[in-house]
Image 1 (cartoon, one colour):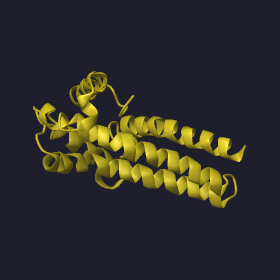
Image 2 (cartoon, rainbow, N blue to C red; image 1 turned 90 degrees about the horizontal axis):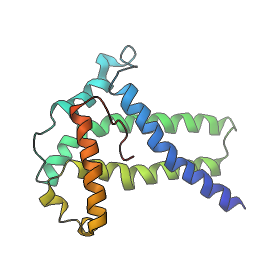
Image 3 (tube, rainbow, N blue to C red; image 1 turned 180 degrees about the vertical axis):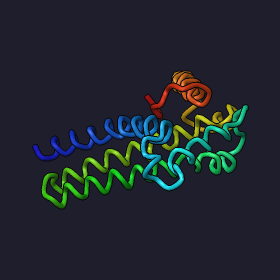
Length: 166
């Protein structure tokens, strides 16, 4: 029964990571709700650089996209540290068990590193680079990904679509 409970907490960690990332992306790094308490509006300006440098065409190499994506990852790494610190605080106070802490953080990091980060990188690659990935050789996956990629691209041009995957 404990394993079912921990699996549930793991899944909640997965789902909440997208929700937390959405609110962080929209309110912190776009609208700058922490600009008065962060030095030189660091969080917002760092992420806005990701949008300002957005290329008019897709990037043709992983090395170029990695340096471009870094301007975006910094703010989300700060979010990860922030969430980790809050959860550790409540775990040390005894409100969260260490097992629940591990399952929840495990779900969040699994989703962030297996889906969020790679997908965001793939969104910025040219078709020529994407076609090299085995995953995208399957037509249904390719079509679904291309829809997500266009959804993400709209975010770089308009004030919309703050989620990373969904």
